[in-house]
Length: 218
Image (cartoon, rainbow, N blue to C red; front, side):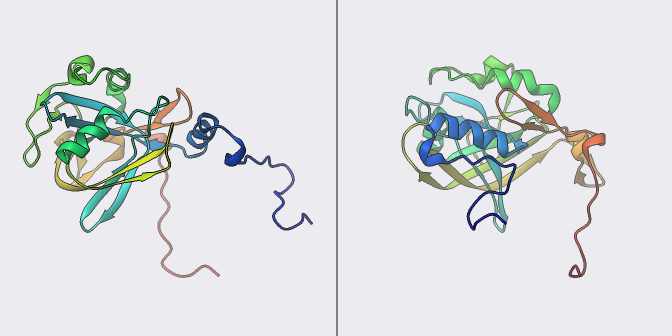
């Protein structure tokens, strides 16, 4: 039997304390898969629109409805335009981008200068939001208008986390992705991020049913 604390045979250990931040970040994105993508629109204080995808994203709770995404600090230690906009205005919109929009979404992921409008880069149509000032992208079947609750910074330097915690003020759902009043993941076809340049998306073949247990396992 292996000594306590020794990895089982056949595994390889990786110590973040001995790895650079870039290698650690790469390994992390290979292990935590698939990751949903927050396609976030925001406005600068000067009124310049921004649209960018982030794969460190998930739901946080339902009361109030909250979500969190993390625009990590850039390699050159700059904060992303989205983070700066959200902190300045405290408003943003999180979209779910489906598989047919993959190329257009990806086009917005380049780190353009702050005065560039990524809605135009990706060919997305601006439509007004109801509760916040940032535009929505009409082509995205799910949009969630959000108000910033808190930004939590963890770490410093390249690849450090900046957790943006927000409260959803309003949902916009296209009828085309609804089935009996529920969002149908097959109709939605959400994109998921894997490691490196690889992605996946939901299909009928990739879904399986696994009901939650109604009694303790024996």
